[in-house]
Image 1 (tube, one colour):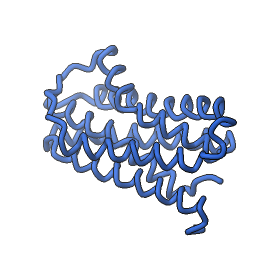
Image 2 (spheres, rainbow, N blue to C red):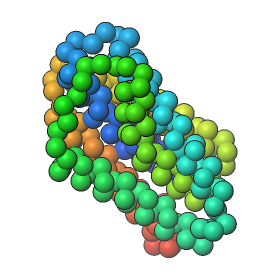
Image 3 (cartoon, rainbow, N blue to C red):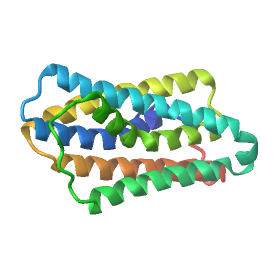
Length: 193
């Protein structure tokens, strides 16, 4: 069992929503960032967003025997929790003041913080019994989508402001929840597409 290309793209967009929101804030704080800073933000967020599902997949495969009977429930629960948390943070988390710096340490911490949900998604990939080549394609798609959306986020933040970041997080959370529900319903035989 795997995901369709459309589902993979939706997951990638959903997972990239946090990085997009932080990128908007970075753009807002930096005023008019250079192309180097835009690509730097995209690179940090894209790299970690691709790395974390790979690590999650390896962790999931390590413990696959333990969770095999419940793998569809695990995938559903993880996607539900990730999505709900993204929506909750978008609606209730206080605005953090973004700094205009793009220092290595700060960007690494931000990139890791925004990609923790991708780690959990990687565990759900292991539950779906991905073939290794599909995992490689998935992490590359997730990384590229995050890179693009993060670059766009910095540019938007520099010109518009940070309202779009909250909307992106809410939409991303809803997408992840819907995909989790679909995985569960497919496994239970309620739907077959």
